[in-house]
Amino acid sequence: MFPIYELCQKYGKPITFHAGLSWQPNAICEFARPVHFEPVAATFPKLRISLAHMGFPWIAETCALLAKYPNMYADTAAMYFDSAYEFYKYMFTKAIDATWLDRGIRHQVMFGTNYPRWHGKRAIHALEMLGLREETVELIKGRNALEFLGEEEATWLS
Image: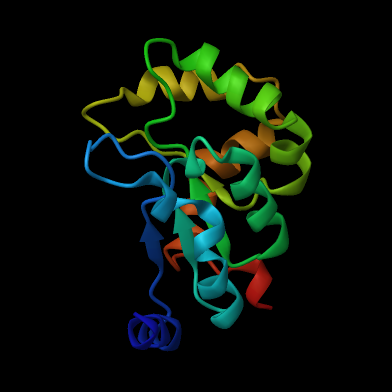
């Protein structure tokens, strides 16, 4: 895969990896642990990499990687079951402290839904109810995705 990573870095194309739990019975979750993507981030420092689903259930591991590698991002897709608010509250106040999200990695988390399985309106409402700074919520809801996709200049490349 490294030749593909080289090409993506050369041409400014981002990559998203499925990270964390898979619902497929024959898919081994260990292979999708966030830490296994660290060699790619370290070897290709200008390659924009996103870990889907915040690497759930390894949220803290994902956050540590985001804090270490400014070229890594994560999305919130498929991060709730029946109650978006209760699940987001758990993930972003219990699994990790809200300070991680609001002060540390706010430029690297992107809103996601996995629609049509999960509904975006519920997830947006849940995100807005976490008590994060307004700027953090706006970054997560869209500005970070524009940066990840290369539509806005990535501040970490400067």
